[in-house]
Length: 399
Length: 118
Image 1 (cartoon, helix red, strand yellow):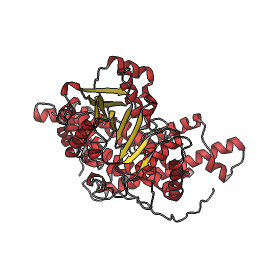
Image 2 (cartoon, helix red, strand yellow):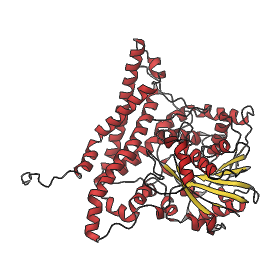
Image 3 (cartoon, one colour):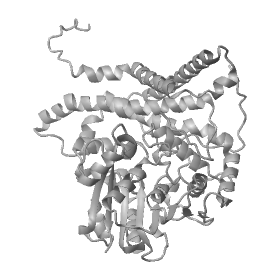
Image 4 (cartoon, chains in turn red, purple):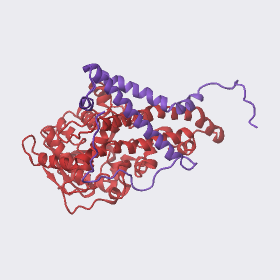
C-alpha cells in the first residue's frame, strides 16, 4: 500500500484522491509483479522457443529479446499500462499539491528559516543554468520534472516528486521513502566498520531521501546534498528541518560542483547517473575524483549494468529507456562501471560493487548476512522494483 | 455524500507530459482506448474504496456522516483486507491478459478444431 508523506510538508489529499493513489499503487504492483510474470511466461513458452527454432541459438542480448517481444500483444498491454500507470502516479498527487501550493511554499520557507530542530543551510542560485538533459525532458513522465517553478520560492515539483514516489514505491521504500540509501549505507558501514567519514556529499539528491540516511549512519559527519532543481533542494532542506536532521542543501550541477579539492570522505549518488548522458557522467566522475580525499570513497546506487544480467533481464530493465522518457538509461547500463571509474582517474583495482538486499523487505539480519558474505551475485530481483528487490551499488576507493 | 466544492487553483500545475508519446498498438486509437479503460478502472476503484469506507464507518457508529467518511482511516487489518480485494479486483479487470499467458502453459494439442470460418 501507499506510504503517505508524514512530515511538515504533508499534503492533505482528499479521500477520493487517496483512493486514486491506492489504485495506482495497486496497479503498479499488478503490472510489475502480475503482468511481468505473464510476460516472462510468454517469453519462455513461445518467444524464446520460436527464436531458437529460427536462429539455432538463444537471443544474445536485451535488444534481441526486445525485438522478438515487441509484437506480442501481452508486451503491448504491459507497456501501454506501464506508461499509463506511470503518468497516473504523478496525476494522482498533483491536485493536492496544486490546491496547497501557496501554503506549502510558505511552510517550507518557515521550516528552512527555523533553527529550532536542525541547523542545516540552503543555497539557491538565482542565475543557475539547468542542464538541457533536465530542462528539455519530463523525466520518467513527470510533468515539470525536477526544476520547473511557477512562483518565487516554489517547492511544488519537490512535493510532486516525494508524494508521487510514495505512490510509485508501493510501500517498498518504507515510511520515509529512503530504503535504498538506508540499505546501501548500512551494507557499506557493515563492510567497513573502521571507516569514519567526516564529510559526505550526495549528488543529485532530489527531495533528500538519499541524503539523510548518511546522517543516521554517521551522525558526526557534515552531510551535503546538491541538485540542479531549485524546488528539489528547497524541499529537501525543509524536509530535513522537519525531521530534525541537520543537513546542507545547495543548487549545484554535479559536473562542476565546485567544492575544494580533496574535501570529502564519501561522495554518493542514488538513482542519479542513469538519468545523465554519458559524456556528463564522465565529467561527474572526474569531479568526484577531484573532490575526494585520499582514502575516501565514491559510491553510486544504480541500475545494474547489462554485462552482469541475462539477456531477458537486460531487456526487462531497459524498457524505461525506450518508453519512460529515460533515454540515457540504456547507454548507462551498457557502460562498464569499472572502466568509467578508471577513466575518471581511479585505480581499477579499487573498484567494487555489491548487491544490498532491501532493508525494508528482508530486514537487518538478511542484510548483515549478505554483507558478511559479500557475494555480489546478480539475479532477477536486482534493481527491479517489486517484491524481494535488491539494490545494486558500485564504487571506488581513492588512494 | 459530502460534496467538496471545486475551487479554481491560483497557481496552475501541468498535468500533461510534454514531448512524444509512446504508442504500442498498430490499429489507430487502441492505445487511447486502453488508457481510457485504465482510467475507468481507477474511477471504479474510487467508488469501491468510498463504499468500503462507508461500510466501515457505518459499522463503527451506526450512522453515516460525510465528514466522518472524509476523515476515516482504515485500521491496519481493514487496510490489508482492502488491499487484498484490490489485487483480486485488478486480476478480474485485466483477466484477458492472464488468460493469454496461461493458455501457453496448457497442452491443447488434442483440442478439436472449430469448423472453418466461411
